[in-house]
Length: 256
Image (cartoon, rainbow, N blue to C red):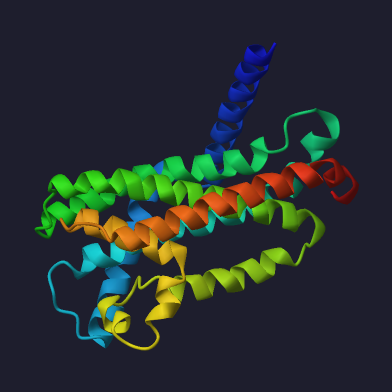
């Protein structure tokens, strides 16, 4: 029985993931190709603007920007989708029984698939600009796993809070802007790490994930302290998220 239920839930999850991808690009002429074109265009604009403002003339600066931007975009989009997932599927929840945790989980997973596809752009840009892969690139798999864990933990917490507190959507948008500026996406992290404000970056687990990923891309050993902190934060977030979700999921029907 447990095996049948697992297979059934896995099928439902896969269908929700497919649905999420279709809905994301249903009005786009380019479809999923936009996941490749959008980060490339964004990288060009950000490189021109911030490269000029900060006097960055290094050849690999676009790779630096793109690597941070891609990871932040996934985190932002996936957690926002998870936050809205219960209310967005309220009509289904009221009619058919489906384990409710599958909704935020599918929101994270379909965005993760799109994110993985967008990494093709990073690979191409890196090679063109002379940032070639090394054995350190294998570290990227660890960073991506931690990124997925972090997004899942935060997404579960947000999806629970979002059911009872609708203004959370607006507050999270503000929070994401603060998170973005403390991820060192548009500027070299080294410019702040030596200052008294370095703790602001180091307290941001997403910054730690981005830095470990960049180490892999640029052929360096990742910062193990950053890795340990981001893993610990992610595990705690998942535990809190699962407990909060399971404790309150029976109340969702009264709020949606």
